[in-house]
Structure formats: structure tokens, C-alpha cells
Length: 356
Picture 1 (cartoon, rainbow, N blue to C red):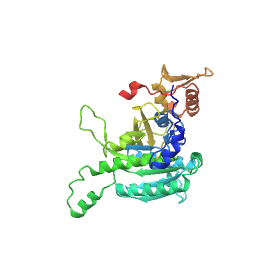
Picture 2: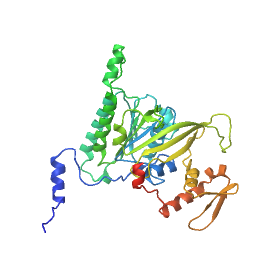
Picture 3: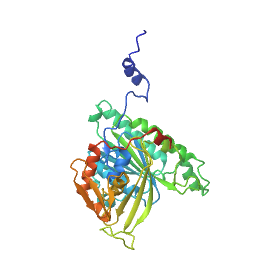
Picture 4: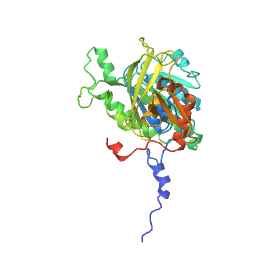
């Protein structure tokens, strides 16, 4: 029998001689929480892990649906907590420093850099320059010794093209003939390869528009399919009104928003799952928001008369509570999360799920 090739001997020569290729796998080693346990789980299969570094993530939704709150607020804050530096690319001129501070973001220039951008080209040049300097400085370090870095693009939807600017200057707004969609696709395709071998992540917000297709009524993500195909995670968000007081009682006034997050694409858990996250104006998002409904859907919390109960998998202890009080039974929700992890009841991705 002919002796097989020693593939390892080719690895070094190939990666050195051909620019833009790499060998081996790039499974995420750093994860950043979204600030919500249920959303984390739907994205990654882990309650503590949200979006991965080394990948491109997109949160898309209508105006006011909570995209910036989660990405520029929660994800930025939690990235800083794990020691990552953050670069905010702001195309909407809406990320005020005081708003970020109120959300817990550290705006110290050594921890956070905000850069105003207007064109897709601006984002491409910024990312290219940053990543070139990053690789020149840290490319020879072991992966775990490279400093974690997160780029937040808020948003892709507001970026323009040179054609847009030229037409605006001439007062003749014909549209860019699909150039923006092509540029966004090229932007994502190029950057996913640049960050793959490094603890560098990119999370972007984008806009959606109402579907006109009666057979496919879900909102459509703007900017073409390029960013969707190349991204590792895509979340579609919708905005509903929250009319509850701080104790969960119904009121007539709008007290916040209900952000419905549907995981359109993920490579780390089961896709097409949704969570409704409550974000009161007065207190902000509760990280436990949506957990009760998620556990009820899994059959872990069941209805028992006029209350709902959970029976511990390890001790057999029974916990009963009225439905409106369950979202604040944090100690029991913590227990369920722990027992769900310990019993390996992770959401599994099947071939049937991928074919849907």
C-alpha cells in the first residue's frame, strides 16, 4: 500500500507562500454576552456566551427595536468586562457619550474609540488599516496572547456609496443600481477571512423592511444577501410595545419595548428560535427576561393548577409560583440554567433543522 502524504509538512510552506490562506480550525475561544441569558443560549447553546470573536455577527431590525441597545450598549460593555478594547464605527451619528455611559460602557479613549463613518469605503479602509497594524504587531503571538478586539458597526443600513454622494451633490437621486449591496457583501467576505485567526470580532447592526411577499411575510434585511451569507450569526429583531409596571402588572401607558429576537442564522445552536426580551425605559433590560417562557417551551416549567412549577433534576425539590412572579425568581432560574447545562440538555442542530 502506498504511504499516505504527510499533510503537516505542507502546512507551513502553503500558508507562507500563498497570501490570504490559513490552515487548521478557528473555533471561537472568546465569547461576549449579549446581556440576556436566553438570547445567549439561542445564539451559542450556552447561557453565558453570546457572540464569538473571530466571526462576523449581524443584528437587523426596524428603528427602535433595540439593536443599538444590545450591540453598542450591552455587547460593548461586556466586551470591555472581559478585557477587550472596542472600536465603534458610527454611521448614524447617534451614539452619544452620555447614553453609552448610562448603559455601563467605559468611554475612556484607551478602552473605547468612536469613529464617525459615512460610506462603505470608510468602514473598509478603517477595518483594513486596523487589522493590518494588529497583524503586524501581534501576528507572531500565540492566539491566547493576542489582545481581544471588537468592532461595532452601527449601522450598515446608513452607510452610503460614492454614487449616492455624487447623485446628492447633483440633486439627481436615481439610486445606486445595487452598488451598495455589492460593496457590503465584499466588505463582509473580506473581513471574515482577515479576523478568522485572531480574537477580533465584528458585530454590525442593519435595517429591515416589510416584506411584500404573502408567502414569505418575515421582514427582509436590507443590503442584499452578501452580509447574511458570510456572517456566522444573524439576528432579526422586531419592536413591540411594553405595557407593564415594574411588578409585571398590566398598564395602559407604554413603559418600554418588547424586542422580539429571531435567530435567523447561527452555526452554534438551533436556528429559527425566538425570544421576546422586555426592555423597560426605567430600568433597562433584565438579563433574565424571556427565561421563564423559554423554560416553559422546553417543558421544564409546567402548569400546575393556577401556578407553574419546576422540579429540580438533582434534589427533587419542587418550586411553585404564579406566572407573573416567575420572571423574578432569579435563584430558581439560576438553578434551572445550571441543571440544564449539567444534564447536557443542549439544543442540538439536526439535518432537518438545516433543511428548513
